[in-house]
Image (cartoon, rainbow, N blue to C red; front, side, top):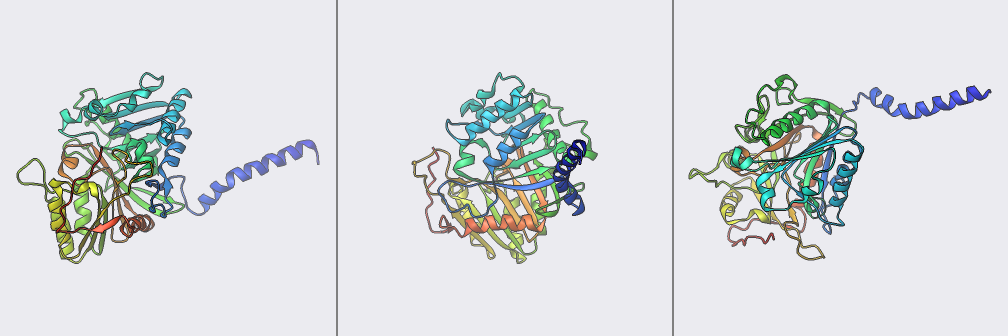
Length: 414
């Protein structure tokens, strides 16, 4: 065999090895689009048996593999030396150094009175930071937590850009690799980018036919989960990009259509708001579902037992077919950590095929005054995985049923 033929054969072998996974995916009907569930587990707990991908690992992968752009919209940044989030900050700086354009939106009011770790990225070439005055715009905060990489991958979930969200808080999120979904989140980001500069007309002239909504969902065939249907819903009311679904309407629609079961793991729940009438839309939907035989299990953290909310939680817990537990994550061996050791997840599963993954807490202002986003996923395997996460927390030694006779003390946070 000549040297030339040997060289060509080697090239063919290398090419076959590289391309064979792609041919396998095509043969099996899988696309290059994908869906991934992502979880943060508080250190030194027994909540780590779900085997979902770890937030730090996924964030690191997405940032380090970015080639062109990263758009981040999050409540705030909170960094600390020698923590895993410090590595994320370094990775963002490195990405900007190789030419990746990075834009960041954080809430202005929270920034003004809290952690200013985002300043570590200020003034760096290829990084631009804006602060959105949601309090002035809609009376709330920029509470969403998502980012878009290279216009093709989206992360969204309960995780703030906070070192504690990677190490000491229970969180749930998801990554969707799909250009249509990325375009939809980019529309939200671009609208809010304009709002940062006081442009209240940022929601006009959007391409409605390109947006992902309930009537026009993304459909992808994932290697692990199979066929998935997914769309997004947004808050606050009045500042939803034209063509997208309003979160509260979608949430109520799913609860009202439930037939067998709801497993809800949510950070806060309250029927009280600034108005004298209160906020009973979700409460009523849950009671109606229970009345028609739907078995409802709700898991709340001990932070949710604040005076303004505990009576509503107790009252809901005695409704037939509704069971509520309170979780208390134990202290870390290093001692008390402010704003940590809590279940901060915001998701639920309906029957055996619908899952809701969100940045939204179940209080009125999160729907009507604050920017939030949710993912609605139709897929039995995703439902099963999240149901498993719920069961681990529900059955853990950290959870106890609500005691209607107990005087709950507000939990120390700082």
